Image 1 (cartoon, each protein chain N blue to C red):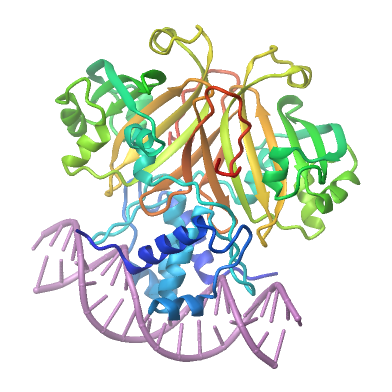
Image 2: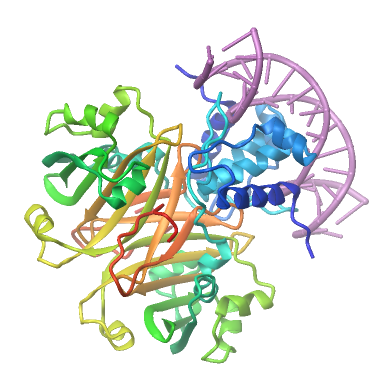
Length: 261
Length: 261
DNA sequence: AAGTGGTCTAGACCACACT
DNA sequence: GTGTGGTCTAGACCACTTA
C-alpha cells in the first residue's frame, strides 16, 4: 500500500493544477501560508512539496513574490526513464525487442570502473534491439553485475521488460548517471537498425545504482536519429547537469563516472 | 558580499570532503546529528545541505542507514553551464568566437512559443561560431527578446562572453530547459565548422528564463562530434530529466517547452 | 533494541519585492 | 509598510536497517 507522504500528495495536486491550466501560463501560485491553511498542513510541509516542483522546473521561486508557473510539466517518472518498456507505454507506443547476444565474460577496464568491480570480474553482457510499433529504434548494450546478471540470464530472450522483472525480484533502482553524445554505427548497429554503415546515432550511456549506492547495470544505448531527444531542466537552485569535454586526440573511453584521469 | 546561507557553506564543505576522498568511494557520511553538533547548527540545516548533495548525485540516502558517497562530484555550476566562455575556462581551454550574423526580425512560430511572444514580434537573432583553443567546435544560433537583444546588439562583435556582459547589466539567468538530440549540418554549419555537408552534429536547444519566469533567450547550439557530451544525474528522489519521442513522419519543429500538441 | 534518516509541526527572524 | 519566500531552530514521532 505504502501511503505517500503528505508533501508528495500536495505536490501531485499542485502539479495537476498547473497541468489543467488552473493558474495560467506565467500565472502565480497561492502563498505558502494560504496553501498550508487550505490543506491543513504546516508551512514546512508545503515548502517540501514546492521544492519538488522547483527541481522539476514546474515553478520558479524568488524572495518577495509568489511562485510563478514556468511551463506545462513534461516530466517522466524516474522509473519511466529507466525502462524502455514503460516509457514506450507512457507515450502510447507498443514496445518490443529481443535479445540478440548474451554472454558471461570478464569486465573490461571501463565496465569494471563503472560497476566498481575489478577488471576481469564476471559480468553478464546483453545486447538487445528495441522497437517501437515494430520498427527498430535502438540498440542497447547492457552489462550487469554478477548477482543481477544471474536474474537476467534466466529470463526468456523475448521478455519485454527487464526492469519490471528485476523489480519483481525486489531489486530497486534508485540513482542513475546519464551521458548523452553522438557516435557512429558499427556493423552490429547496421544489422540491427538497418542504418548506413558509419551513420550517426544518438548515444546514451547510463550507470544505475541501487538504494545502497551499489552499481547494478552499465548500459550503452544507441538511438536512430529522429526517434528520441533528451530534455533536462536545471536552475540556480538545483543543478544536476554538466557538459563534458570529450577526448579529441587519442581515443579515450569515458563514461559518466569514470575515474578523473 | 552576500554571505551564503549556512547550509550552502556546509554543503560546500561536505562536497569538498567527498572530493578529497575523506570518506572513500562508497564510504559513509557522519549521521545528521553528528554533523549538526560538529557544525553548531540544527538538524534541519544539515538536512538542507544534504538535500543539495543528493540532487547533485554526490550521496544517496535511505532510511535506516547513513548516507553513502556515490561518486566524485563532477558538476558544473549553473552559470558555467550557460556560458560557453566560463565552461571553457573551467576546463582550462581558451574560449573564442565571433558573431557571424546578427539581425532584428520577426519571431517565427517556434521562437514565439519559446519566448512567450506573438509571432512576428521583434527579436534579435545572432549566429556565432565558438572555438576552443582556436579550433571551431560549435555554431550557436540564439534569439533574444527585444529588451535583451537591445543590450546584445550593442556589444562588440568579437566580445568573448555574452553572458557576462548581460550579467553586468543586472540580468540574472535563473532557469533553463535543455533538449539534446542529433542533427545534420547545413551549408552555414559546413562553412563555419569545416565539417562535411550533411555531417552529424550534436544539438542542444535551450530556453533560458530570468528569476521572474520570463523567457530571455532561445538558442540552438550545434557541436562537432567528439567535442562535448552532456551528463545528468537523476534519482527516485528528484527527476528533472525526460526522454522525448521525436517526430518520425511529417517534419515538426519542436523545442523543450513547445505547446503540447 | 539502538541508530538513522524521513516526515511533520510551530514559531522566529530576515531579505526582498511590491505599492 | 505589508506580504512573500528564504533560513534556521527545537522538538516530536515514525519507518527502516542493522545487529
